[in-house]
Length: 80
Image (cartoon, rainbow, N blue to C red; front, side, top):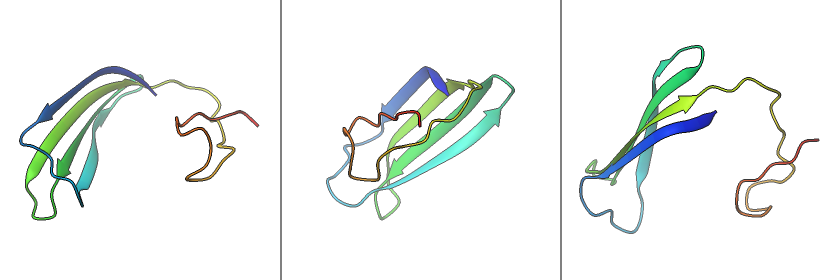
């Protein structure tokens, strides 16, 4: 998928420590998907909300060549 548009809004300062995130697929067509996500504190207080419009790109999936905590830290993948 390729990002077409993203909007993030901060409702209140986000504290350091444990946080919970939830992402939802709102609608997916044949070429575009609409998604949203929220970031909350352990007591349920909303700290940030994000929406995005994504373009669905068809093609061969790439396989990661490294595990979690390895690699270049930028999320790059290499075809195998």
